[in-house]
Image (tube, rainbow, N blue to C red; front, side, top):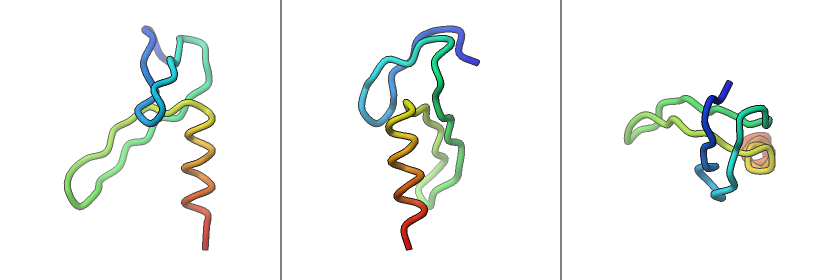
Length: 52
């Protein structure tokens, strides 16, 4: 749960405590990925990853 507002790392929308959001924590070839995404950007990422 967020204690302070944060910006979506993709679009810049402010994510406030109590808002729904996605937390992405992974490892990429060039380093770790740790990011917070708003619901809209999380949906776009999900759709992108589900493409075949």
